Amino acid sequence: MSLATPRLVASVTDNSCRTIAPTIQIFCAFRYRWVVPAELSVARPSVTAVTARVLTDRELGRATLARQLLLERAALPAAEAVERLVGLQAQAPLAPYVALWSRLADFRAAELSTLIETRTAVRGSFMRATVHLMSARDALSVWPVVRSVLERGFLAHFGKAAAGLDLAAVAARAATLAAERPLSRAKLGEALAEHWPDADPSTLGYAASYLLPLVQVPPRGLWGRTGPPALTTIESWLDSPLGADATPDKLVLRYLAAFGPASVRDVAVWSGLAGIREAVDRLRPRLRVFRSQSGTELVDVPDGVLPGVDVPAPPRFLPEYDNVLLSHADRSRVIPDGRRVPLPPGNGAVVGTLLVDGTWSATWRTERAGAAATLVVEPFVRLWARQEAEVTAEGLRLLAFTCPDAEAEVRLMPPP
Image (cartoon, rainbow, N blue to C red; front, top):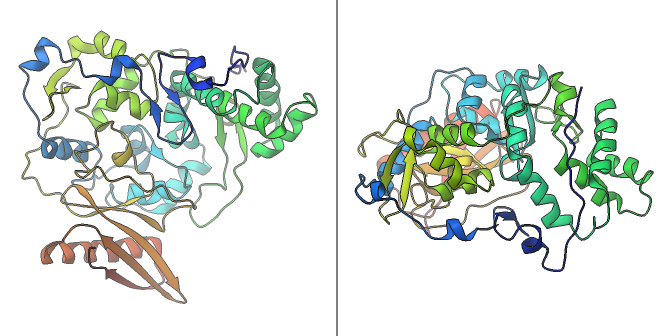
């Protein structure tokens, strides 16, 4: 089977981010910090957008929550939900379990573990060069679309260290090694260093993980089990070739269906891709156009749901890195005060964020002491008595999912 191998050789200067591609987005220095191209830095509303319906932040929030299955739990199989959401953030291996529990009726952890074990779902680097849980079908079709994001990410972080390396040759050798048996990034780097002894093994390992379509194999990502992040190629793991279409148009439409209505910058931030404006212009005859409160043009799929602002938004406990908080350039629809989203380390399912009435209002963590499990909720806004009762009830349900045998308690802390 054929494996995609990047056709590039590292060549950078001290101003490496701008040298690689001065007019495109580059994943620079810190996760989720992007250098935004000039074409996206200023909103350019069309004539249609000027006269289009204005959607308030609350309307946008309700729309996104509905499409994210966070207004009402959906009676869907986990596999279908993962595809509808265009994947789930999965840097923390267990985070997708909490994400699906908050979105699906009667979700059981074993359902997702089975999908991973049977290779129906996989964990690998996709949008924004970050680890996502994707369906097998999406992994094969989406990776070629976001390949350029991963390549730019590698050059932004490791361009200097990789200067002079034939990265196509490195990637080809790494693909052979990873297809033979799953290896950690460190082991891949050590094996590659046998062929490139003058290169830094760590840089070689990162070259493999950025430039190749790789997935992390189980037991990593299974509920109740753990394991090191061992990597193999998507094609060898799924015994199928990568898709041939690298254009972003279908991915843009799927993003809008799951996160819209949204601006060009929103799509670019979620995906990490350059050229989003051109894709939106190609799709424009098929899209609805709105405006945000600030006047920014928003586009949407024709059948995207727009619930009323009075539709209830029950409390929802989200895991770390949940995409609903990280997938827009303008996050005011769910984060009215612009608060920075925490990105804690760990395996997941023990800390996260809490939505109340559709906006991020608190953080949560689980504390274990013997047979007891306490869910500590720390609001940063005032909650009404009814909301406190709803949060407590939902928190007890979360503990029944994450710590089923524990003596459960929810502790609501006063806001600052």
